[in-house]
Image (cartoon, rainbow, N blue to C red; front, side):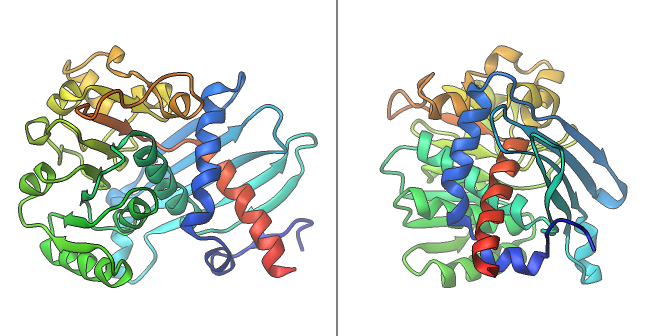
Length: 323
């Protein structure tokens, strides 16, 4: 038997919910952007059948733990009746290097911390009166992002769009049941849905843009989080150029992966298109939205300090629940 606790996915799902991770995620983003010596290395392994494995680590000087996470995503598992997500999170004592706990979360903590980061970005950058939203995507993260929106803004209407309209309809039905005070519809026309929205979330695995600059209007906020490796892209160059401000979770990672990386590689924008990190906004180092007419973009890759915050929060909740 190991000399450290090992928690299963079922235990983690029972103990940890989205609301638990919003504030820890905000603190982690701010700490990453303001702590000298913060480390968040990433390795991305594209694999067969559209699957991938993300290996992330995190250390914030002065913290109790460091972390190593392996997060696998295999969309081809869906027709096999198997979970799409898998992997585990390992917490280590930052002083001794001893294993503190192993969390076999099957992607659950990654899903929740990503949704929490979406909530943090909307809270920091969307207009306070934002009431209409569009979610592009129909998977688990799209569903969680819709829930996350309602934690931080008075969302009255959500449009859900996906290339598979049947899946979009099914997601809209679930969300309508889970969010009884919000009207949720499956959009047939993504352009119209985006034009009518105050907040737009992209949560797809697309390799080509699903959101275009010509669709945007003043006052909107966009959080793009699906493109997290060199092969994926959700935003076109016109959208990044049209945005008043573009913020990222990590400058370094955004230049290596996802939408900004792709746009730079094609000569559509340059690296100075990044106006700052979300953590710099949260810590008060830079301003976010300046006027109600700004178009703001938050481009998230997903960083290890978010996983560290999620794992430490989960461990505390698990110890309390199981005690």
